[in-house]
Length: 264
Image (spheres, rainbow, N blue to C red):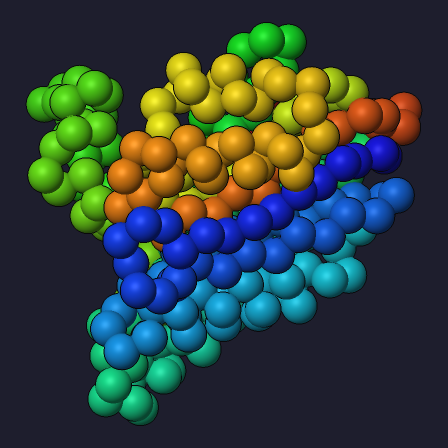
């Protein structure tokens, strides 16, 4: 496959430090993209997000295609390994108590995409002029939306909009969600922390992602937009443009050909 990629993290306008971490790598066979948004005092959030990105990337280093046997299980194992390592430090180091991190993982190969998700960082897909959020937030307001108590617009501006209900490292175990589907030429993927998606509405994301500019210019525009609206949090964005995909069966892990997603 042929990909163009840009990745950048920015401290924003308010925070003194940056607790986001990212990983972005692409080859002819696949791409691996990770965003983690840490939390916890005394730089613990920075430690948690860096640990998550490193451990997950190492755990998936040998995964070259999402249709390899056990691809979902391997992604789950990588996220759970990160969880165990971070949780162990919260137990053994007093200054690290309460630290944790979101993690959003995107693997792209000719046979499709595979996503692992914990927390409220997000992955979007722009395809055929339509922007779709592929992940689902693990957050208090998302639960309220699902229950019918809040509209998505109310959730966006709710005082508890930044409260997450699941993260890596907070507990001894964690259950990621998984999503999978086909990849096609012309796709544009965005992996981002809530410092971007919490500041910039989907309509504006759609406009910026639809640009024909190089990925680095689009990422710069996304971050500038979030900072222009206040930059209240750290901002991280990975933008991936898919130029070509080799012919491959449209199989996704754990499902039939062309299945839209996989969740566990």
